[in-house]
Image (cartoon, rainbow, N blue to C red; front, side, top):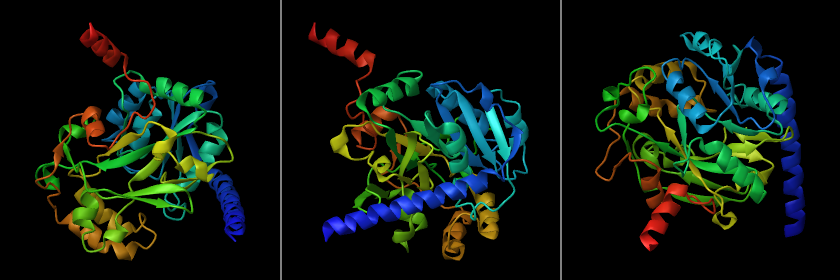
Length: 353
């Protein structure tokens, strides 16, 4: 019976993946190219995919950070921004930009659009899929880090890397977290929860679900089961037959979701989530009215109301952001079997002598 159940599960997931791919093909046709520079993508380039709306203030730092990591080209979907987002991105020579005015929720929160671009342009490349308020941190001081990491993953026969989404927040109320356009958000969002995360294996997709942090602790205190998942697989060596199911939390085929399995010895990253800048308050009013960010939007009115009330997410056990080495000590990021930094080898040799 277990074997039969497994056969049925595998079949259903294959059917689901085919449906997602068909949705992606149809969704891609609705994307209107603003500037398509994908002809300049070279073999071996590391690509970044994102869907965003009204992120002009975050984008200069976002682009700078990921270029420093080793991203060669950005493929971005602009969901009808009304600020300077499109003009800013159009001026960047390593950005290809598409605009779409459809419903973010109806496109499975933008993943149909992103899957369409991944299918068309990502196959054979290492692809990083993130939101504009997510900054990937890797367990290394190397610059650029992504080429070294992906080369090592290739050598291990691995095709993915998982990352924990780590919510950052200020010491005071959210309205105090004012960040100048283009500045590093972690200079004002300088605290996070170092512990209190629940890890649970979910057999359907063979992933490890992670929940916790300030959103569950404060914003979903009455309904912790509705708190957002924090596990993601943002980095995948893409194949056109792959698909993201739910944001970057779940991908198909299921083996892409095993990045947190310690038995594989793979490194893990952290996505610093800088949602909680002061602008989150007016944005929450807008998102509550638009109802585009949750499947059952009415169930999350309390969440938006708590954000609009300008809460303090800090608590006495909060940690101050100090870099990836502190995250490693807290068990939030891992080098796995990835070779240590050259600087650490030098330090060890010096200590031995």
